[in-house]
Image (cartoon, rainbow, N blue to C red):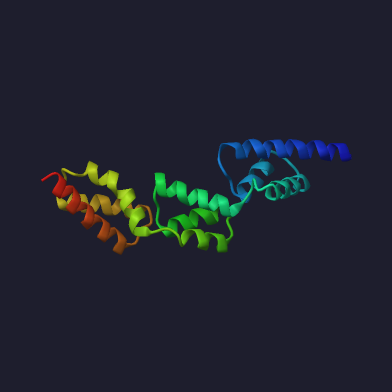
Length: 161
């Protein structure tokens, strides 16, 4: 029976390693994936402990990775980022620490710049409505959205005038 547990442990460890090879994952993501693959709780717990001990599985590092990835490729508001991290099983104190580093003004501007260029030929009402909707869907507050929209309108209008 011990050999069976060891072979299940090794298979579980291999599956976790493959899953982590694509990108960092939260502990909850790895646990969920291993359960879906049919591994037992003792093997999963042992594998997660081993991965944590070796520094391969680290929720703080994952949360930092997720935040940086979002800031670069798909900026979101603090509230939306907080929700995403909580959904991925990150502890509240880690979420608070990571989300605190997000500058909403910069994130909103980054998210809106590409859209603003596409809307360069639009009148102000259309520009404002479409960009406001876009930023609100990404969770930004009305104050941040209004500030960003007015700044980008001036920039786009000046550069195409």
